[in-house]
Length: 195
Length: 195
Image 1 (cartoon, chains in turn green, purple):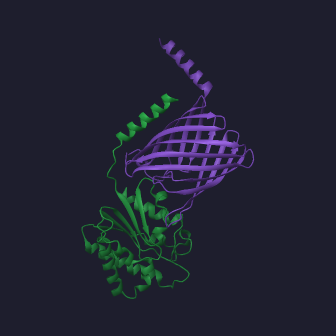
Image 2 (cartoon, each protein chain N blue to C red; image 1 turned 120 degrees about the vertical axis):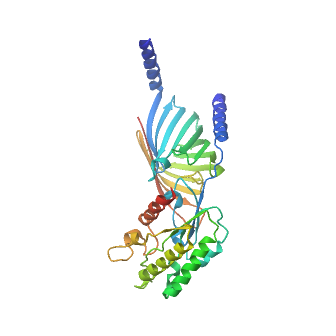
Image 3 (cartoon, rainbow over the protein chains, first blue to last red; image 1 turned 90 degrees about the vertical axis):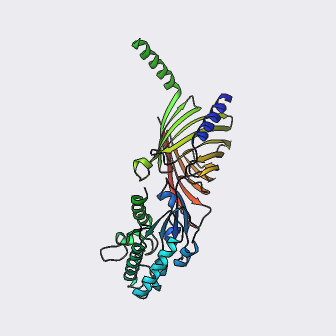
């Protein structure tokens, strides 16, 4: 028994000494309830992840994180709670400019922005998908204008649509929040880019 | 010479086989393992992840252990080392614990696990659980633990049913987080079969 304890302690000590702490990237996910409900460990079991999702949040929440995610790889999924504020193309353009500024202000090492997803929640009107498409186009344009590939735009909007151009309800619990099949699409898309 | 080597190998294999047991198992739905037990106290195990990721990001872990039963007490020590195939991270530790069976229908177990991850540093993990045997084949289990189910240590309550039929056991569990905004409940299955 004593020999075994000595053997165990020796092995563990040797392995501890051998494995130096690495400078591994930290992947910070920020956004609304779609992020907050995401089981990041289950989706990315081999990464160091932090979940900064907050239910009901929007652009102002992203702006609050200015300078607080320095050096991280940041993944953003936000905007669905702000879609009702988009009343015209001009408003969409202004929102997109502020959105991109907020992302750049994180101070992140790399940023992946996931497009705003379609929704079909019980309180939504028929125009929700059209407005979100306008918003996504404005954000994509603004990211391109920011240049130098500082933000990677992941347009997954169409992957969540059914034949009728509405949210595929097989990917959602309630027309807004995603089920595991919905998160699987996001995980696959992100894995293509971050691994 | 070759005959002597073959004869020696046959004798060693036969004598080992007389005291040994080989088993197959599954841990937390994501890790399959093959294990070997010698003289009912020495154990060795190789575990392989089945993440839906590229092969390089699959994880394997090697365990070696010793356990001993003294009356109603069982004590064990099990050092382990694991890493991904592309060496993106590694972790190691030692599970030191025991189990006491004061009544036929009740078992109490406790475990402390000094755990080190190359990217996340050191964590002291623990596991405290009880098992109520309803019948010879069925037991209700509950545990409080922060041992990583994937990579990060998260405090979780795990409750489930354990079914034992001859050489096979199956242990479906609900894993419920006790901290954090997102209450991501996981359904995990463990099982084992020994030959």
